[in-house]
Image (cartoon, rainbow, N blue to C red; front, top):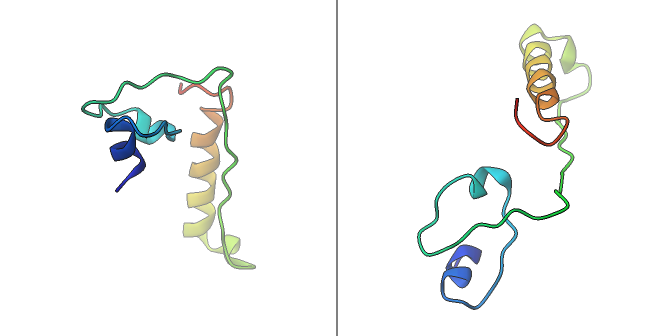
Length: 75
């Protein structure tokens, strides 16, 4: 049984990541937490692989997109 299933039955409270909380979940009310919580995410690559153009481009895109959320809000 998932955490949301336990919430739906009234047996639990769950903390959900923004991607999951951004969707509508039948039978569950989503409340933002205050103060806002943040997580740190890392990209795992093999040593020296960042010299490959495809990996360098992927990392550059990830960093660029992550900076859009630097203040905790998209945009």
